[in-house]
Length: 183
Image (cartoon, rainbow, N blue to C red):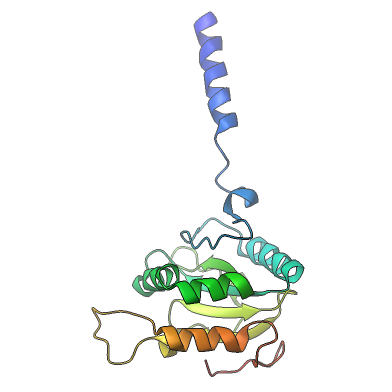
């Protein structure tokens, strides 16, 4: 009987010390971090984006919602580009709350994504205001470097910075609900 109680106590202690995988706090980076992390298929996109919008509103920022998946090569290239390009990383941290939303064959997030324009390629960027209203829908292909081969995937720093400058709060991008097709 004592051995069983000890095992139960050890299991309970381990459970209490392990953070829950789906806890909002565990997935929410602090204000000075830019946590690109992985796409989380089990996450609730409605809740994640609502929390990102609330944070953006509080901080006077916009939401940069990137839709894609861990299966997507260009999604990985985008993550690496942001993390390895200091000016881009800093501009995102300063003006946007970064939020990933998973799309994949087994979880398409159809109900959530039905409120946005159709996505043709991944990753896809949606910019939202602090109320969660769509400001802009952006394919990432126009932000790629020109003349690159399929094996040499890369985004263009100048194009990306111009895009971020246009769509930052107070930038030259149109107001909510007036989606523009140009980067």
